[in-house]
Length: 314
Image (cartoon, rainbow, N blue to C red):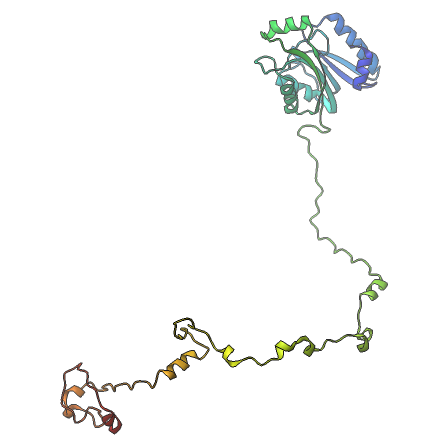
């Protein structure tokens, strides 16, 4: 990887870079890459090298590197574990960037994952803005090394370069919230424009009777409204129909019930009832005003019909 390619990534003077390498990278290629990075960051920057197998055993300080470059050598074929990705995210400064290369396959395998799975693993490590930069065929030496180390026998291998960045805050960091529980002053009402207030104000002096059009209530009635209704049309039509007799409703309020009762004739006179209950025994047991006075005794419950003369005399 040339110096121009490193500059395209955004590495500049004063940056701190962690270069992670793995077998079987050649020492000459690793030295050339480290020197190119050293020239790029200058004396104010820093370039550190670390083997991937010993990255978890190292005592690198957290949030100490602006860049982490992993497996960028052409003959590298390393697989990044979840623990390795988490450690790289830990040593990055807030806002720092990770650039790595890894062999991927088109179909999911047991030892080699797809590019989508790799990007998902980076997100689960706490990184963001995960972007695929490029994808190229994997070299013969890298393919041979990968198959010997992982046992992968597929033919759909390629090399993908992905970049990701760390959020601009530390994991577990906190910030104090400024909360005010005091009573807020009531908001001042905006000043009212006198001209606007006058526009929406109405007084009795503003109304001139000559300018107001009054509507005559009689003009609202037409000729049909002034006609006297026919009394026959006001009668109730309860039960009126072909072959039907008028029949008043249960709670009649139109007067039909009284009309039918009058037409039915006089009410039948009700027979007097015994007040003492001894009328059937005979005159000796009857009151002086008893309607049955002078009649023979009768059986209890027997129906006795009195004529109108006796009722009137009584």
